[in-house]
Length: 231
Image (tube, rainbow, N blue to C red; front, side, top):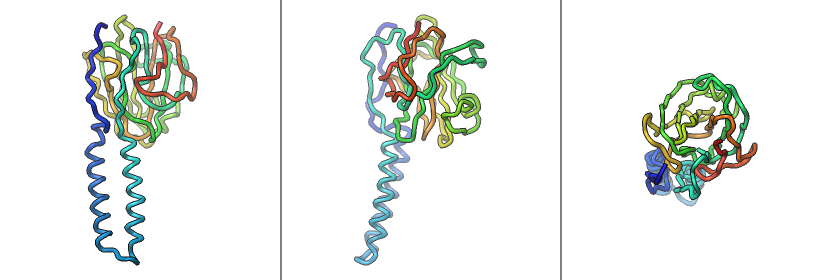
C-alpha cells in the first residue's frame, strides 16, 4: 500500500480514561486529606485503610487505561496482527450469515480486566463500513456472545481485495464500546481501531485459506502478535 501512515498520538494513558482517572485521583486525595487532618493516634486506622484500599483501586484503573506505544516492524502485506491484548479463545471455521453468507475462519481474543483494552486495526486496507448493534451482556467467552451481545462490526477491504471483518464485543462487565474506525477511510496496522471498557472480546473473520499463526489459549499482544496470514 506504499508508505504506511502513522497517526498514533504519543500517549501513555488512553484518552478514554483520562477524565475518570483525574476525577478518581482528586476524590482519593481529598478524602484522604480530610481523614488525615481529623485523625489522631487513636483514629488514624481509617486513614490508613482508606488510603491503602482506594489507592490500590486507583492504580488498577491506571493499569486498565494504560496505552502502550507500539509499531509493527515487519512487512504488513498479507499479515493479520492481533487487534487486542488477551488470549486466543476461538480458532475455527464458522458460517457467517450476516455479511458473507459463507464459511469464514474466525479467530477470537478474550480480554480480561487486566489487559490493555485499546484495539488496533489487524490489517492495512479500506474501511467499507462500521455498524453498531445493541444487545445482551453474556459472558464474552461464550459462543453466543459474538451475535447476541452488544457489538460493533468493522468491515475492511485489504489492498488485494480480500474482506476482513472485525467485531468488538461487549461482555458481562463491559458496558461501553468505543469505535474510532469510520466508513470509507483508509486504515493501517498501528492505528487504534477503538477501545472496550472492562473485560470483553474481539473476533476477526478471515477468508478461508488464511493460515492461523496462533494456538488456543495463546497470549496475544495487540499490534504485535501475528495471528494469521492471508492466502
